[in-house]
Length: 299
Image (cartoon, rainbow, N blue to C red; front, side):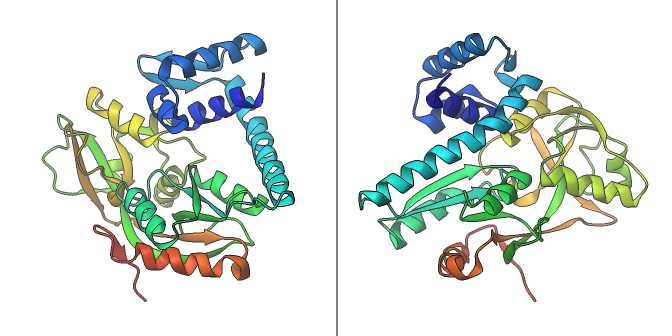
């Protein structure tokens, strides 16, 4: 086992899909699969359960992930320190973003950042809300983009836009003709959801808890695209923010507003060091203002 294999493993664990992980690593899919097999052989454990194109992490993978991330973060800090020692430190910005904040947010943000700060190296990580806040507190992320307010004390936030939770169902679902679905109706539905470490799942559970209910969980996945790929082949439903709806994919799905009550969401920038990060926070906010499909927070 070496750091390269750990980096490949972490990418596959976080993406939940060989193709997306390979693209993230700029690696071929067969090469990535081979490295994961070598890692499994070295450790003498199975790390993923393979179901068609989807990968589900085993308990061994979850254990390895909790140890691998701090190791890789420590290695990157050591590299930065050595570059600074040689006077070659690159100016970089590490940003953690929830998969569900907005399907159209990241690509235009990267381009606007490139134009505004052409010498800035941007490191973007798709993470759960728990991981974003943990890495911000550990100092391995500079800024997060997620739901407000942050859960951990010691973190600051700046609102960006408003969203709301919607019900997503396959087009042959019994509720296909409903224009809106009440929270009580949605509470009865069998669900395909994110795991409990994801903020969307936590928000959903909190809303149902106010009704004295619990989610009817039939299956869990750790990546939004995997959930959307799977739903058309089931009779299950899920809940996602409306702004996370992909603009040109998943035609077999219907997005239904939730009502009685609505479940409003606020999305914003999260950061730890207000003094050090204030300039970059203000820059990101100015670059994100006016992006299509985003409703600015008022008040």
